[in-house]
Structures are given as C-alpha cells and as structure tokens.
Image 1 (cartoon, rainbow, N blue to C red):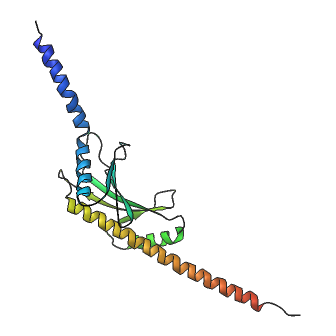
Image 2: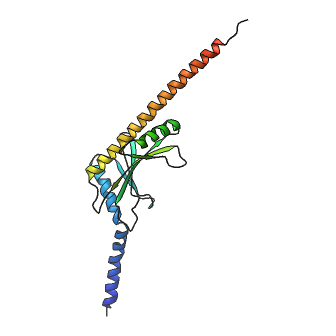
Image 3: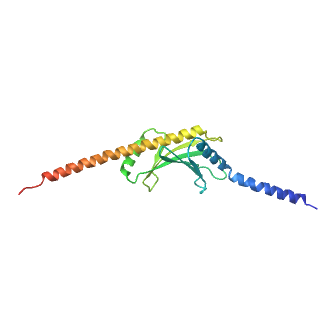
Length: 187
C-alpha cells in the first residue's frame, strides 16, 4: 500500500526546493528587469552576479562606463536602493582632479563625488531610492544620462585645469630660460 503521507511529503519537498531557490533569487528578477529595460532603450547592459556582495549592472553612455549597484540588496532583502556610479582615473591629473572635486562639492550638482581611499580615482555617484515598485525605465535612463553628463563636465573641467597648469608651467620655463640667458657673462 502506498503511504500517502510519504508521497505527499515527497511531492511537497519537490515543490519546496524550487520555491526556496526562487525566494533566494527573487531579487534577480529586479536585476533582470532593469537590464532588460536598459537593453530595450538601446543600452548595452550586462548583469553581473558573480559576487553576491557586489551585485551590479554595467552599462555605458557618452563614453562613460556606469555601474548600477544594489548596495542594500541581499538574498533575503528588498532592493530599494540603486546607486549609479562612474569612476574616473586621475593618476595623470591628481592635483587638478582634487581642485575640481573641491569646487564640485561646494556646488549643487546632480551627482555626488568622492575619492575612494588610497586610490587616484574619482567616483561620481547618484542614488535612487524606491519603494516596493521598480524605478521606471525613463527615470533610470534619465538618471544614467545625467550622471554621464556630469562625468563629461567633470572631465572637461579637469582637462581645462590641466591645460591652464601646463600653459603656466611652459610660460615659467620660458621665463626661467630667459633669465638664464641674460646672466651669461662675456669675456
């Protein structure tokens, strides 16, 4: 005779295993929704779940790579916060990046800015806080475009500061050379 309780329990376990897996990956549907929304709007977007502590989508626009990070999203929590981040390498323009960063922080801008400790990088970022609903694709793409625009503005400001510094250094070199020339003594 078939033990119905054992059969039911086996059936329940078979049904429960996928449910547990789905619950653990429930937030991946949000990630997939954002990735698909970006792709439908013409962006190349790649979901990276290789590190469960750094779940993110990578996309790009206006020459800038943008990471969409889910800092509060863990297997058992809701993904109510998105952070858009773009990094700039300032290894060749450390002084200029620092100066532009200081003035940027004193102004009201869409994007915040920080220098990750121990690096020669600058990170421009913007947060989007949600309720239980996903952020609309138009809000997400507009935010990405605005962050990328800020990256362009910041980069342009750094390049202008570098050009001014280079011109000043070249001018000083000419003045120094001129001073040395006038100090030549004739016999």
